[in-house]
Image (tube, rainbow, N blue to C red):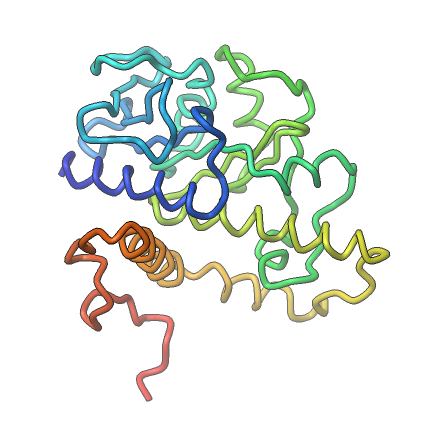
Length: 254
């Protein structure tokens, strides 16, 4: 079980970088251990998020202390530990520094439902503005978790994003879609500002359709497959483009 979780965490890091969310050796992803919910696997410091291996991933406890692994722990571990502490249903936390989300956060504007991606976040995206510095202690980690509230995303103003998912696929999907939503709105702002939006009466239904569980898993599978194909690597069996690998629950039988 742990080996499979490590492998999925590794692929999550690769997907994030492939989608433009790498920031040299900064940014991190974690996954709660299913047999010990007060501990989680985490990308270590000093390496890129796409450079994780089964040997360098570390294990951290809910207090933010490293309990196993040779590599150093990120100073911002408290984003992960405190979100997981506050939200027991969450099994993966991501913190990255995507360019468009950071630029958007500096505008002081609300993310609008003007695209499929923006519609996903039409219930609101909280902005953490208590500090623009790093989140390097438990108190600030708790503040980020509190700001996230009942949702699954928060933008750290002038800093980056945090997404929290019930699965690795879920958290990665949210990180990618949030950055895309910010990028599309920035494009509209550059053209004079958005003027047309998704109809209010369509928001809830469209939001649920764009964030389906099967979409999260199928998109993750595609992105892992794409990464392997780009590096001319063999695609793992569970991610190959075969019918039995796909979740079809969101599609009509005929």
